[in-house]
Length: 487
Image (cartoon, rainbow, N blue to C red; front, side):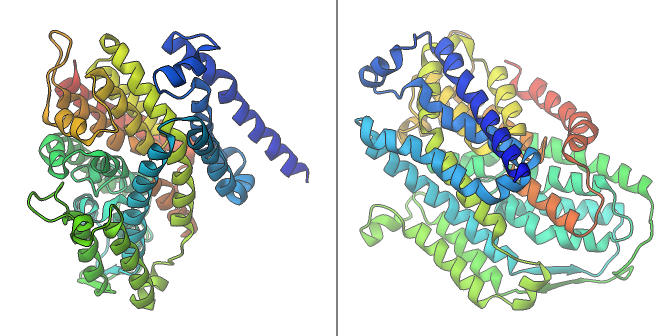
């Protein structure tokens, strides 16, 4: 009882801090008085400033809950996420003229997001990979590079689930904390920056209207520089680690895959993503083909997830220690995030539109990155994406505006760069900086927990940051800023 009381008190304090300061900060930023939100809401069709409080509170609690009040968070996070989301949903449903339309659109985006994540999670859980070789610096680097590639096809979550256990098995007896850290850096985050399937922020951008094939030609060079540099550092560290007390796999051997049938399910998921006129011009829309406004692609993905769970090889699920807890947590948290971030997206877009001169590419890059490293990178991406669109007088709720923005339009400010550079900076920052902490991206904590359950020495939250991400990642991020985003 005492511990529960302390948890509740700490929860109340964490919730109260953003509640107390958020209204003041946003009011100062938007130059309005305490009475102004009601006027602005109906005159400009904007939500009141205080309505961003549930969003700020949810992000703060997501960041601190697993660390400061783990037991309370583990038991009650669904209630917290859904409850805060309902605050915003009720206000939009009953108080905003356009509220029902916004809520409907947000629900569609959430279903698209969770359909892709859940189907990839289940399908990858039914594929068990056993590598019959012992880990060496070169073998490990090749495995990490392979993970970086396939994360663009099965998502960072899918790639992490597929490879973390075989990666640990081939290195059993010589695993060091840096092995897990570099896996998180490369496979769980930066690797998935080349396609919208790769990482949640990019998929959300695709759902908003960013063309599917916009990402690769814009991001490939920063991706190559960062991944190659990290692999070089990893090989040096791994060579210094030595052979250790190697166990398990033979010195030479092949790769055994249990659950090959799931590659068919994986192909269906990818086909469902590509069968869209927004991806391949001329392909008939599934919605138009079946005469429904929304949901055919998502229905296919959910059906694939159900089929994969029922028909996958049980030995593969057992070998991967598969369970639904990780995807359950993602589903609850993101329904809260999608709902609570609605007013923040609208207000940031409006603010950036009226304060364009204060937002440079550098500011978007570093602010997006800093928040993506300590909060969830998907909503952070959308918030700053909305702000960048607002700078150019465009709207995140309008797909035509987003396509125009991604294609590159001139800035209203003399001497400024075109809009596609802003989107490139936000995209790189959201995906790459998600590796800065365990809470920057969904697979990070998943990989940490899997390694910890296998009795692998993994760094704690602060050690991960000060010993690995700050000294290793930040120099790369500074280099990318100087090369691409120093505007």
